[in-house]
Length: 139
Image (tube, rainbow, N blue to C red):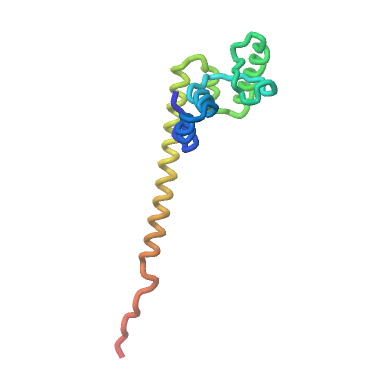
């Protein structure tokens, strides 16, 4: 699934560097083919390279963390709550991401329209004469 991150300069630069750097290539693969949920032992794996989400040893912690996350999302009226609750359904996640991407696109277009409007107004101010020549009066 594509994300907004993939269109950022940092991601594009990582793609370039990954051709020559194995560590960056490994990180890029993780970012590109990211799974829906991740669970890491940050003390044992500070680079978060080993996803423990399917490890039976961590299922109680996973259940507890999912509950805490859903509770917090409800309390904060997080718009991603339905997607979180439907995380095992690729269609539901794809629909959520499509909605989010459309919203982001609309916000970008809105910001650009405002910026262009301000530039146009500033250009017109510069182009307009400061004051008109006085009209000659009759004696």
